[in-house]
Image 1 (spheres, rainbow, N blue to C red):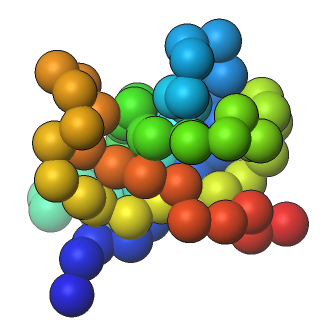
Image 2 (cartoon, helix red, strand yellow):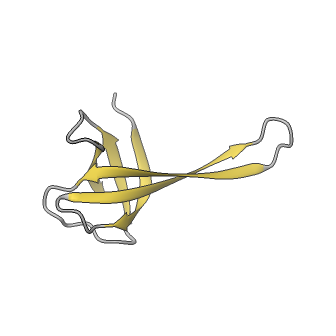
Length: 77
C-alpha cells in the first residue's frame, strides 16, 4: 500500500507539477505541547487541473523527476 496524504496546493506554476504543503501536528515528548510541522512536496498533475488553494489527496509513486515523488489523485473539497 502506498502512502497517501492530504495537503493544500501552494503553487501551480511549474508545468504538470503542483507544490503541496502537508501540515501535521505532533506532540512534544516532554512538554506535551502540539507543534505544527509543515512539509512541501512536488506532485505530478498530468492535466494541470489543480489550482492554488485547493485541498488534494496525493499518493507516493516512483521517482518522476529530480524532486517529484508524489502524484495527485483527486480534490478533497
